Image (cartoon, rainbow, N blue to C red; front, side, top):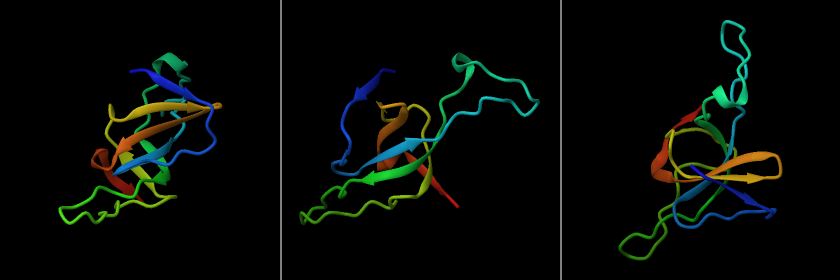
Length: 103
């Protein structure tokens, strides 16, 4: 999967897309072993940074997205477009790829 590197300062998703800041991967196992970057798995948890207006229904009205800015969510492992802005990792995904919100 390729990563897009952007110089933009803000991103506004379109349709039912959600812009997430990816949580940092675990650098250490439960047993205390430190993992190199190449052995770390892609995290599946992120914080919602921006939300699109939602898709339109048959009457042309936007159906709002179920998540809000600031929510912690669990998303599908191989979904979305990876984006790097500065030294931070983000992912732009469809609302359908969000599995759950975390409390």
